[in-house]
Length: 270
Image 1 (cartoon, rainbow, N blue to C red):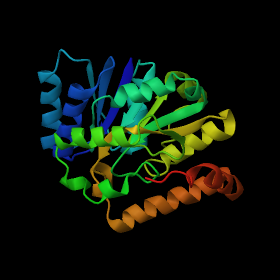
Image 2: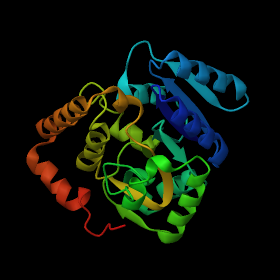
Image 3: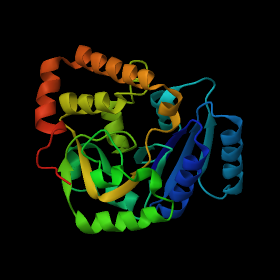
Image 4: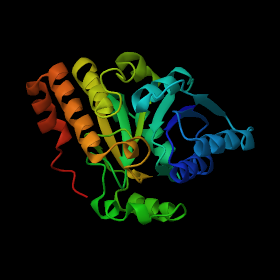
């Protein structure tokens, strides 16, 4: 079973689209874990109604006691999950048909044994997962239009898999790897840099690497939810602090080696 964990902080429209897409476009047996992280009343009321309306579906609803941010909210979801596969999914995403089976099938493959986490192509990511032409128009895409985008991506990049940096908007791994690597370090990386630190732990200590499943597609609007609560100065400061903590923890030499070998994959050109 796949445990899909969605931390939510406001952004009602995108959240409603995200949850609907999960219910309508996920093929594998799954549990949906919604972690409501201090959302406003309008979003909270929607989430409660959504859970009640879909009470026949396997949905868990959790409210945080105080603002927990993305990493801790994700860890709370992990603590309440039971699936053999776990996906940390941003609330401003739209999953598309076969998104889950493509990721799970790779994790079960021979090459997947070398994988710490995998993710799909997208319209917005701080990694090579981004498809530039979609990034420019990502806010114009509507719920139903994402399916045609996914079909185009599947046709163009069919069966293409690459070892490269991935980010956390759709971050999928096995429970076995979770038991090796552990959860996100929410104390040092409450939001920015959390998945990079997690992948570095997997690479350095377990020789496991992140992969992009290029013919899978999850639309990411980006810049919503948590980051929307921060000013541009606050966002810049969060990333700067994350970079400082990564250097302090891993050392510049280690980061430079990973950067050359993995983060900047020169063969990955969309």
